[in-house]
Image: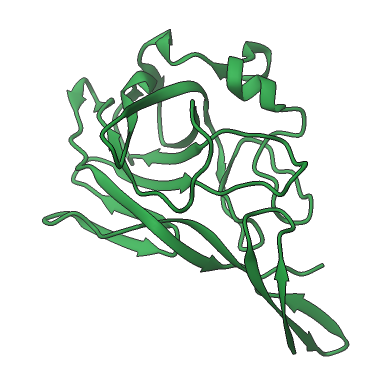
Length: 222
């Protein structure tokens, strides 16, 4: 077993390589944003970089995808993964009301978003995905044909739209990806405000969520 310093896909991380049964796997630590706490009075759970809240009418899971690609990689902006679900009723989400606030008080609204779509999570991926899976060293989070230009400017042919479309209806459990007009900065704190969810026409109140700098480990099998 040996420790290495790497800058393969994300910001600097420490990797532990373990040889077991004739094969090997690595357990890198990545600099990301992690939830600070579950809001008082809300049933929830924090698991590494994700937070899940179970409210009376809906359940929601969030992951602030605040990490940096390696030098020469695609320059994707800061992203937010959001899963919303309910066992009954009609849901809507106003994508213009999913807001980030920086440490100095600046408000960031999404440039573009993808969804509603099918969510997926993988222990091999640093970021949760929305839509078709793509395996590429375990790190990919986008559709196969989604480019940095698509997420910066939108591409309705690929399901990436401008938040000005208004409330988006859906049922069951669905996911969304939002991209913001700022570079990923895992060393900075952010506040996430989701104020645009409604169930059967009634607004669902979700407390603001605080994300702070932290690290997570992921198991990668070559």
